[in-house]
Image (cartoon, rainbow, N blue to C red; front, top):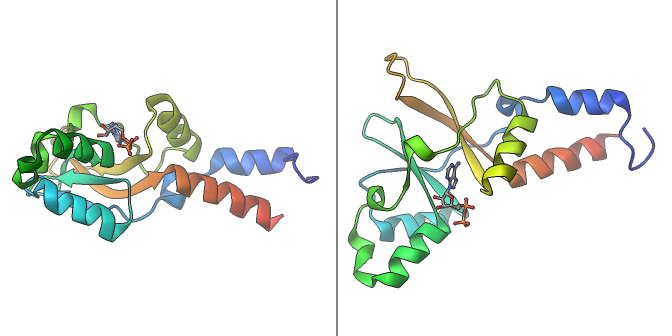
Length: 153
Ligand code: ADP
């Protein structure tokens, strides 16, 4: 298509893109990780939030920089507490699966006003509450994909 106006074929390609084609490596911590260790991990991994799993590796929650900032500002001694006390818990975590479209992921990110989504698959144990974390899709991943598609033209 002409610069700035995607033609039908390009739009079609965009609509077909799957989360599984795009997502990155998840940065995962255990629910017993302390708030201090979580802050260190945010800096070392250069991410805005961390996915929290239980001892079996199933999704337990997600913790963001604001969650960490809020608790440590209110109470500096909180840094030795486990992240499980402040994380957004599994039942409230918005996720996507590899077969979902990137468009679905983008819509969830915008409607929930969040930066990233854990990419999950059902656990092999058949428990519907158990999700295995296989990746992470972020606003940045999605914007980068758009830029790559434009550059390929
Ligand atoms: P920041 O804290 O930098 O604004 P986010 O926008 O990602 O980062 O997080 C805002 C709030 O939403 C935090 O309380 C965080 O725990 C929560 N959150 C982050 N990602 C998700 C998600 N995928 N599903 C549900 N809640 C989330």
